[in-house]
Length: 434
Image 1 (cartoon, rainbow, N blue to C red):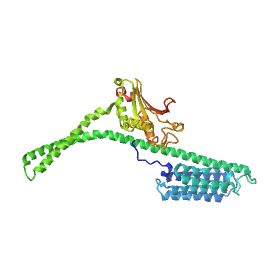
Image 2: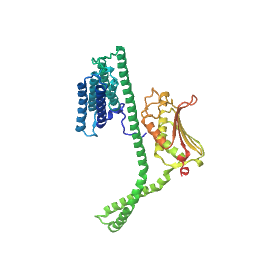
Image 3: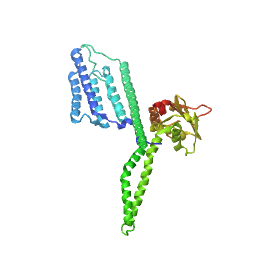
Image 4: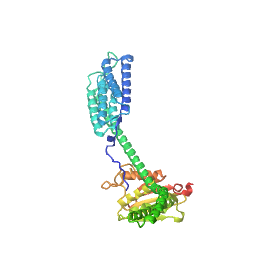
């Protein structure tokens, strides 16, 4: 199977970096929100609170943000240690602000989960776990804050211990859940992005290979005229100097090599006519081209044609279809015990290719996720790969050609895995396409 030079890392986010400008904008939003909340509390609601201490903490965050804005360009990307330090600073600043304004009784206490969520979405897992640990310590410290929640003068709002414990548990669980959910979504998005990139690379490679014949024929055509001139001159030189003891041998060599070059170009120019012929493939020829590379692996490949070849569709050569069907057949051969059956059907409305093997089939949990990137096993106890990125690429390429795929297991009378690929006939027949 064609492989793509993309290394799959179990922690996909470890290769991603956080753009500084994104973090700077979020921090300015935090500075603005914190300032508005403090001023509304102090001057509109007129609740007593340590205003100077609050403004110092907010100003410290603003100063650090201004420094990194001036020090680094907007396109600068933070490496994991730097991002961890800045997010840790955000966590510490917000913890200090909440600690002097009521601790967990402050309604803004759940905002402590924000730095952890940002880290989970963009940073390596170890950094995010450590930051989450710091967040739990900070939330626990807020539970023991001696500072009361700013409230109406003369009234002290006391929070029962049981309710404080409940708030602590709610914030910690929310932080853990939101961080894990964000991490999983980010990881799946990263895997999908890399898999789609691999799909594009495979498709470009297949198209490039299919174009080489045409390029070779064009090059042969362009080289034909100068080589003909060289050949004529070589013949004249051989006639004049063929028996010359000094130059005769060199002239004979020049003539023989020019003839050799003409033979090579002659073979290349025949590719132009063959290319036009090979650009159109009957369905039977397409299936044979897919099956040919997999016949020598000790597994019998049985072809069943349900339809007359006289009425079979004839379509354009499609590198994506060839690669996709070839990958599905390769997987079937890998997991088959003795036989793989390829069934080809075509009617006036549709074209269907079914690839079935006599192996153990798909495990139920794998069957639900088949075609996702990096699903690498059919059965739990199967140590072999083969249903990972390659199958995702094959599925993507076939779906781009207009096909619909169905993965299923055979019945008790005929066990094994079965993959059906079906197209509208108009997409596989050049006559209908016109």
